[in-house]
Every structure is written in structure tokens, then in C-alpha cells.
Length: 123
Image (cartoon, rainbow, N blue to C red; front, side, top):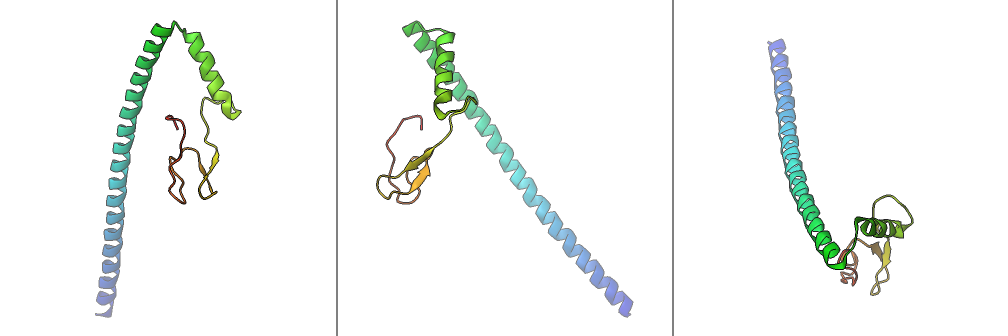
């Protein structure tokens, strides 16, 4: 009888473990689905931005008689502004004029006091 009781406890523990693992798997699947949705939305945004950038370049090139070489030279100049030729624009520390604390330049406002930063429309 005691062995049956112990067997029942073992089965109960196993059932709880399986239920817990099932719940964890369900949560992981939901997180993965949300991540896939986010990636898909970001891909759509990147594609739209690429299309708008191409349209803007074609308008500017046509109206100002610029060439691809002109664009490439300017891109290299912008790339080197942070001191690295890596194809990226790096952020830099920005001191808040109101509270004096330092925030990342990619933020549009101070993380500490909420002051909106003035700056380039491109961040």
C-alpha cells in the first residue's frame, strides 16, 4: 500500500513537471511568434525606407545634376564623422543642458529630466 502511495506521488510530481514544461514551451512559442511578427514589421519598414531613400536620391540627383560618385563620396564623409569607416553612424554621449546628466545621442529627450533635445531631424 505504501509503495502505491509513493508511486502516486512520483506520478503526481512527473505530471506537475510536464505541466510546467508545457507551460514554459507555450510561453516560448508565444515569444517566438511575437519576435517573428516584430522582425516582419521591421523588414517592411526597412523596405519602405529603402524605397523612399531611392526616390529621394533620384529626385535630388535629377534636379541638382549629381552622380552616384557624388553620393558615395558624401556617404564616406558621413561615415567617417565618428572616426570609423564602418558603414554606420555611431551615437555619442550628449550632456543635457537642463540637468547636466549624460544621455545617448539617439534619444530624443533626456532620460533623467525629460527635456526634449534640439537637433537634427535624422537623430
